[in-house]
Length: 156
Image (cartoon, rainbow, N blue to C red; front, side, top):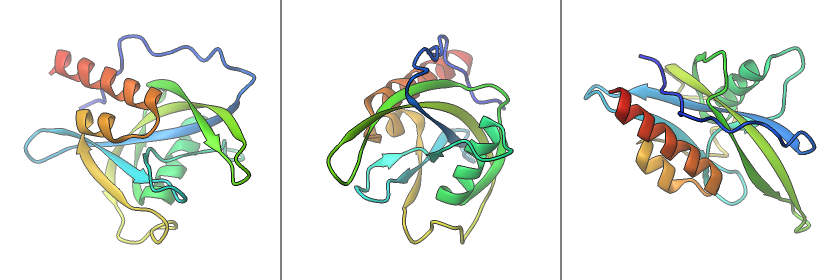
């Protein structure tokens, strides 16, 4: 089963912003429900997707998969193309705000680890995609997840 792609993924016309890459880990439950994995942010404990910077000698999709391993303890296969992008505002310790553009890749989870690099710093949880969309603290990410939910209902 492939992760549904939104009807109209947002174009990345924000070239002057800091660019990060994220993974949307997903699986299909035993009852046939599409679920996505969220993790908490380290400082504020908000629910987010694993994301980070482009890793040296890795593609954007490989970088996203690496973040999912480090932050969420999951391994799997990313799609070759992004499923969308969103903006968020990084709040620094000094109170300054830095807008960032995040390109999102789906990651079909094949394994969940009991121990992973950031286990002691984050919580993780699986939810149906509509619930995950309501839980995330980044409004544009929530919109993107809702568009995936609408698409998945149409293709089911």
